Image (cartoon, rainbow, N blue to C red):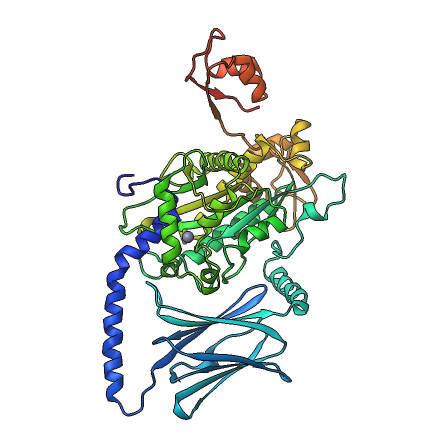
Length: 541
Ligand SMILES: [Zn+2]
């Protein structure tokens, strides 16, 4: 669209867009800070910095504490044992928030205390019920936030298993359908069985990194991406032959370098990053899907991403990533995973299927998968797409994106697209591959606890009437364990093929595993004469 000049990856654009208009705000903030410091200098007792807030996030393997500061500080961190404590001495500072208000349940923290010593040394003591491995660093102000001191308390490796289990227990209690720490079923399946297709779902941002902020200054991308990701998980989890994995399943930050690792550890067949878009005006709208293309190398894009590295903190990026020279956003990792030719090609195909599937649900900003390239990154092997689900800066889209009904609808559209992609070319050894080679439309469904016929109909994009007719059901009632045949099944999306020199119609039919007759019929061809450059529609195989 005209107001968004280059069809590049969105996050580099996010980065630019976030950076540009906010420099002025940053200046205003600096001026305010200066005034504040001047005012402070006039009062009798003053410290160089104030701890204005303390925030805490629990991730599966660590606890992150962020001290929001009025200015940069010097600090020292050390540990004490019996009982385990982490002590942080912040020079020339005072505490302007109440530590007692912090909730640290689910973390190893049992208490937070503070004291001010002579000369303005602020000591914060973190009481722990177990040994942790602390890491700490400070962050300079960015467009969203001021000076920060970040303390990450990593669970020591012995404890990690226990914590992972307790996290799992917790999530089992709240959300019986989701278990992030479950071993992907393909890894656990004994040989000879038909494995599940694993889809890694990466909710953008999280914890300290809120992502884009909405038109109202309140909505945060990290919450919306997580809800859509969870809805996608729930959808795929109910599908026979699919095992989704949540890359992030809570309000915490997962390092960008860690996200593809999680996907790889779970042997993911596809990586889906979920984001929302940002633009400086409220007009921009629509969903966009990104995948990387190697042959459309685009210098401009590489430049923007390189620039982004330098400005990463302006996006609310997190120190440990910065120190690794790593990227701020999922887009970088999506780009990483797309380096190999195969995964690049597959990513574009998968993205197209998802676009086809969500087209009726939301407005598309671009009707084709957007391709971007990046030379500098390494080359993993998992096809990956990044979905910008809509603009939080557009009030209408933001409100819709914030409703659970739309989140669910969109997630199901994405899920249908993902399934269509895998049905076209199922991974070897998967249940879906078996279904396809045996002519099974992959949508018979075994009724689970809590299901109703209307839910099943909705989930599979059909109607109750159609299911009843298809299964000769007299009533609307279903029983747990009952197998429902689904009418229509997953429609493989219409494909297109542009004819290259030397190709024949029969060759094309063979390549797509469709009959010559179907190919002729769909394209209304009377003879088998085709022209180079002519675009053929490929029927569903
Ligand atoms: Zn994002």
